[in-house]
Image (cartoon, rainbow, N blue to C red; front, top):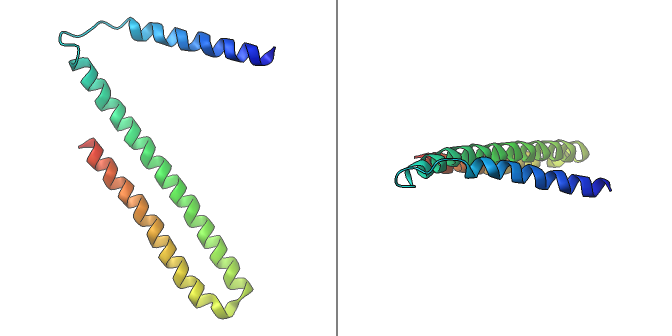
Length: 109
């Protein structure tokens, strides 16, 4: 019964939101209003995409640093090699985040 209620209220919510969308008046050409809507959603999507890229990049960097510290603690003789590989991995992750920033600027242009 609880699952049925959740599905019912989901459908009611979707129908309530669609009524507002259909109530908007149409512009003269029909495309002027759509262009501004697409531009605003494009900016929102680019921001969300960059936020996801930056957040997941930070999580990846944290995991790399933790694994490198653990590896150096277990085998101090290989600490310099582990540190080199860690710095290479951190640079690659950061380059992916910076690439996403360039994509955001290209999209919002």
